[in-house]
Image (tube, rainbow, N blue to C red; front, side, top):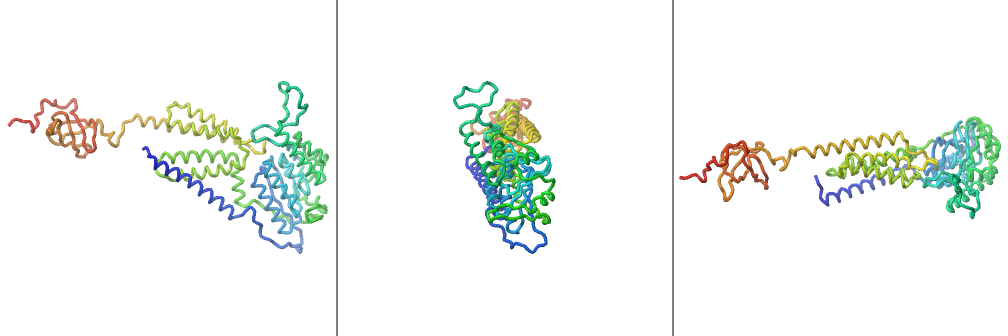
Length: 496
């Protein structure tokens, strides 16, 4: 059924309003539950406790995003309000966004509570952004079997970490297979990041030259070499071993020197609250990709069906959440355009007879776009191939089957409406009478009595065929098997 202009305009307005309302309600609920910039409830320090307090937070295989930065900032405020001896961050990260890393580093540097970054458990890493967080800590520790480094800045356009130029600017072009030096913009990013790393290492009394190498040359070393190089302070087997090793250590805070008393400390873990966990789950490339696909098809289905219902509402919610999720990820424009192109091909399959070519092209674009969607070197895992292939193949198969069913339906005879009456058989309910140049009389069609016209005389009980319809009047003609019109003598013309 085709919809006129006002109907389509109303549907688009419903879609836009639904998306805005859903996103506003979701963000409003998150802000109401825990305002990101609001100060936490204040608690009086508890100096009379038999044991001091150590607050522990875990960043296990977490990319550094605005969500994790806000979580660490809240943990610092909680530790300060509880009068904790220190805040221990169990760190395992592949890296993350520069702005979020700077926000977290600023919170650590301004923290009135000593912050201890412990790269743990065994097998964990403090790569890229994780190195800056470790360098900013009052105490930096690592577990055996961990590594740190590889902090070169990465372009969000998809290039791999770049190295500094190894030839003068006026030298000849590099030979084939030889690496080019960074462009002017990339060199500025390198120098800025190097200066940041050197400043943090100098502030905490760690190896400035190693921090420079970690940025300029993407150096990454295991825990034992990091200790020897002076990149971190100590090695610890686990959390309890760490608390015993840092007991009595004097650290410098904005409020002055502070001696840590952690040997017999009571450990209090601060997990992410449900809102942060939900936002952290949304900042996953797999979730963002799936929400984008589901949202697109939900809205598309709703726009080509009467009214506005569940599919359109859920589709608008999925699209709003996917845009929210993509805002936290280093998205490549080329990958996003390929995904949109693939979805557009699937939609076009319903209107263009391509014999499956558009479905195949859409599946290819969906897979390639999904693989390119997130810039993995920036510390984020890309969209999983185990998710891309089933989604692309299932979408192509469903589109192909649905389009095939639509084409098959179009070839079948219409069973309702005026089109279904064309060619239908009917019986004359009485002799037709001549009215002007035509003959008029009643016919019975599908149990209903209709007014009909014919070009020839029709007798009662004659078998007729519907030729056309004009409003509530049918135009009929005798079947070829019925008696010939010449043998029928209508009452209106019979001699007296």
